[in-house]
Length: 292
Image (cartoon, rainbow, N blue to C red):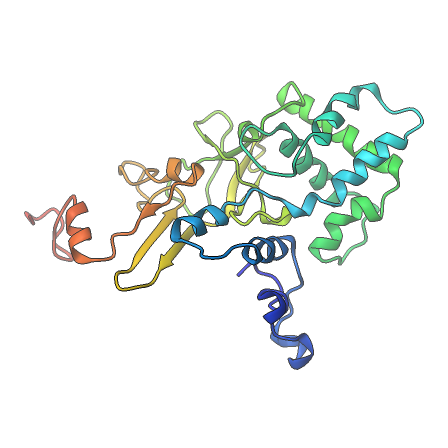
């Protein structure tokens, strides 16, 4: 489930759109769906651990058109801005993969967001068309102008344009509220994952919040699990943050590091596994009343 069309989700075995009324599947294709089909089509004999690793594939197909187009715009410019030479070189060496140390990811993310906000982009486009508009709808000069604005924005907000993605892309949980407030001055954790808009399977939907300069995760894979069925079930899962919504609880953020390190925990499915991990035992409604 990538929130995309079902008519490509199973590769050549996908259902055919012409067999169904339009209202059955209104969602268009997206880069996340494309990414999922690509990686799933290439694997055989997939293990549970292999599935977890696959779910964190760092490839970002949403940049496959717009970044080469930007590089071509630079290469053909009659008088390119010298200040863009180094950022362009960083993008030229990039493998279109997300990661905490990737400066190119930061550049590409903000460049693409600025393209989406371009006043010349027509309204009503589906997401893939809107993302690709920077390559298909803007002239080379316009693309370079958007990139120049992006580099200038990074310098203004962070003091330099060469910002590793993890320094900008953060996880923060300051309270148990559903509508969280984020603060650049408070502790946060670097995250290497990207947004599903660009095709990330491990979706960390981050954006600027409450006037922040950094991006904070506020959508995406809040819970994920992989299950291996057989004579004995085995599963791994991860929950963003922790099970508790009480900041005083040790389980408020105890899964954060596992989440950002792509280290899903083993699920305690059987009674003996649950009992082996138990920290406290009590009957419903009797917690703190002397239960063993």
